[in-house]
Length: 139
Image: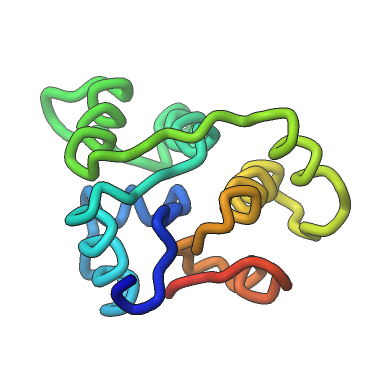
């Protein structure tokens, strides 16, 4: 495996948004990880990421590009990155709330639990997640 990355590479919500609209915000390592995952069809995200994006639109913290609805914007991200969208399973939900992921944001706990459950690295700038034992972060 190139650079030692697992077969699946999980993208945090903000990575999806950076890739779509603000690529300059990605580090070189993060951009390489996305490109590697894209080339190999190995990119994934937790399903909760789309709820987080929809919430950002509702709160007007994201500006919807012209000729897009929130749903079409998110579908474009899925298509352009050939994303595998990982559902919240009972095991992931239980892991997220087991106490081993001490993060205040439930979405971030679910995203971290998804990466841990799939033994996949997580592309994220979230420093709280970088400090989590058992979670390999790329940034």
